[in-house]
Amino acid sequence: MDAVIVHKIDRFSRNDIDFYAYKVILKKEGVRLLSVTENIDENPSGEFIKNALVAMAQFYSRNLAEEVLKGMMEKFGGGLLRLQ
Image (cartoon, rainbow, N blue to C red; front, side, top):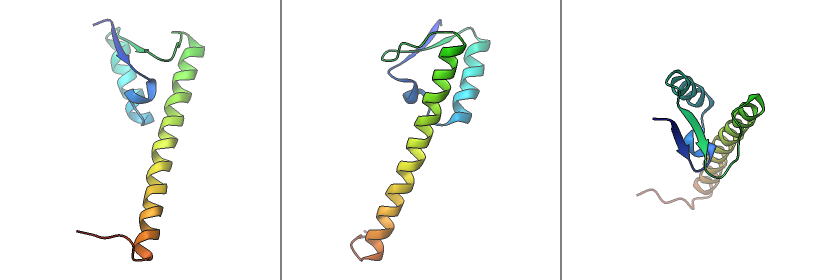
């Protein structure tokens, strides 16, 4: 296998630890990670961009979970959340 092709880097992983672990495995096997929608070079600048995209995806995911929990707690506190 020459490459893993993803729609966007953030669809490959939204967790930095997983991303770096998989990246090491792919590199050892000589497999490239390519994004269909993001034109990212295989050089130090491209690696920086991939790292930044994963960091932003991780922030988005964690922040979304926090906001959803906050909304659920507000609804539960106001008696609007029905548990079945």
